Length: 281
Image: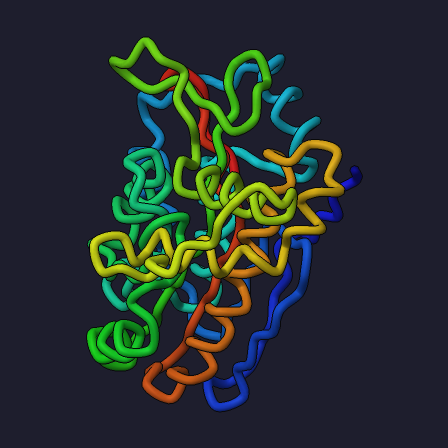
């Protein structure tokens, strides 16, 4: 199955006119407003100092499976450069993330934290924005006066050195582990329903595991799409992204009145790899 990838696209507007909408089968999207020149780019070199060098063979493997993917370093360089031109800088920008609870999702998050400072977290399992409208409203109140907000959101997926999707090598663990475990569990639940072999539990929203219950419900509309996919694990993060994009769109459009000077929204799929190779987006 061919995956349609849209490159970073810019949307210039005032916060009153800022409006995002689902774009479908998109792995990366960035919407920003106009501003002044600043210098977060000065931090890039130190952030990526000591990171693994690019592995040309593995780079081709990742991009074969996820066309349009770029390394986290290339992503940060492009995003920071664009935002610098519009006035976003470490002193006037609040970083807000909606990424999975998995520690591997912290890689991208920590890199942007090192550039813009501590983040406000909206996300939970699979990267869904479980903090919702209330969380976004609280976050907006924390944006510096006359400042900006950068929102980064999306699901994540692992890929091993051999190219197996949905698995990843983790530091200190011999087992090649699932990634994203929550997404795969939800996919398996959905497959059981579409194949007719699963019993829908009435306790899907029990408090002790309500986030996973919500992920399973939010992925239900994608049953046929995943069932038809040539590679279910490769298609899964794109389906999750589409579901999350709809939620983030609603949350942003509901809470955009609380944004001060400007907002940037970067959505995409984190591609987690082994500890000695670069992560991608």
